[in-house]
Image 1 (spheres, rainbow, N blue to C red):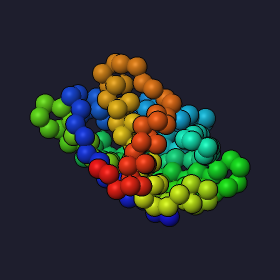
Image 2: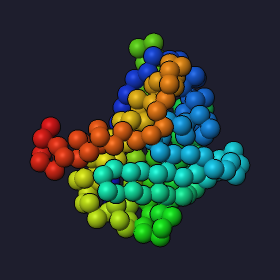
Image 3: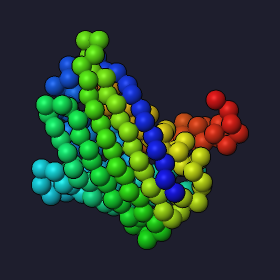
Image 4: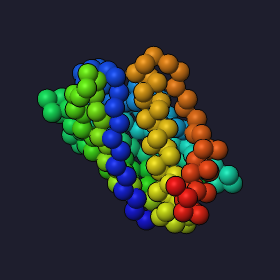
Length: 174
């Protein structure tokens, strides 16, 4: 099952500060709900884990993430992630493109993700998986903004909010 998500958001920080943060694996991993960095292989490759739990479903993925491109001049990057469920019940692949643009005294961040999920999580169907992925990305954005502002970042997944988004998606509510 394949899910495509595109998000654009604005932060009130200069583009160079946002770029330094978003391209630093040790800083950015704490913004991803349920994620942890387990090994820095080299400057462009690292290993980590992501654990998601909502309702009766719990999934933990171990995987590799690589910067395929990181261009400080154009403030654009491309990342690839490949994860496998630690119980052998599936996997996920992610391709992320990100572009930063100086705008309105701050920075506009544009993120496009292509996520492919196999196994247990794929059984929920593309609509619910899309809603769950969007919720995780929204929580990442909130954490990222808080981190840039020097506020506390929540590394745990807001499961109640995600379940609400999924229920709305099931019944077509907006």
